[in-house]
Length: 194
Image (cartoon, rainbow, N blue to C red; front, side):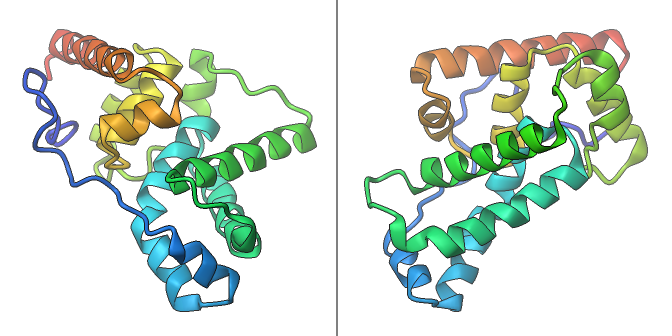
């Protein structure tokens, strides 16, 4: 079983992927139609943005649509970016606004009932069908906020400090929610014999 193999349930997160560092001058270059800078930004942030949007949308196809729209919006609005040390937060805001716009357009309410997750959540980043079923089932046992934290950390490769900043949580609260979610997932998977 390969689910959560990179997550150590007892140790701290010291060995996690290096912190995402985005050079803010990329936005100025992108604003001046520098496609190489745009490609560099995309390469650096695509996984994190996918994970973040997936936590909002809960559906692979819609996530890809919003991801594409987000990068198009970033490209067209890059000249408006004001360097404040949080380029990822700016990008997340664009993605979240596009998500809300899509919800309003579709005039549908997104809820996280078990049936919604069961029918619409596409965990496309997990190649093994059995692992995908286990992951979908396990993610039902944690709250939406805990799911968002776990996915941004485990899939998106974000540092806990970045997640806390982007969710407007104190770092200690974010870490507490993360570890609580992992304990719930561990207990659930052990009960199921995994």
